[in-house]
Image (cartoon, rainbow, N blue to C red):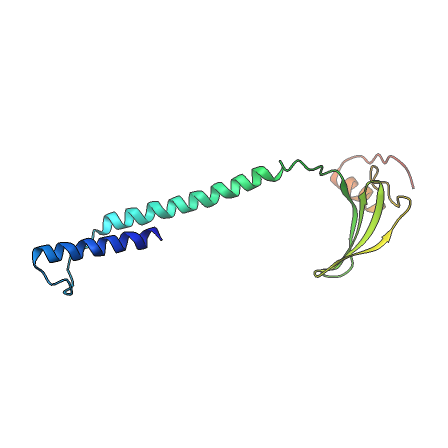
Length: 146
């Protein structure tokens, strides 16, 4: 928009100068463009736009954590893949656990449990976890044995 206004003003100015000099305004004025100044102007404009985009992205990332909302209100207890893009998720909201079915197009409540099915404070320890940590070289100290 700013460039359009600038070009309009330049055209009016050239037309007025041509009339003052006694040159036909319909005749095109040949003038060598100042390419270095044009390139510098375009480069600075591009750098300013890129800086504004990065600044906005940085600001959004910084403000994302400052929403003032309690992020501990909803906990994902467990997620299990059923298909390529379908999942079951067990979430805990206000001490109550809810089983959700998640597809690319919808999220549906499958069951609301009266009592917690899985203790989210102590995740279940399985044989796979024990073997994996044994291969890594760490000792396995489960809190409870199954």
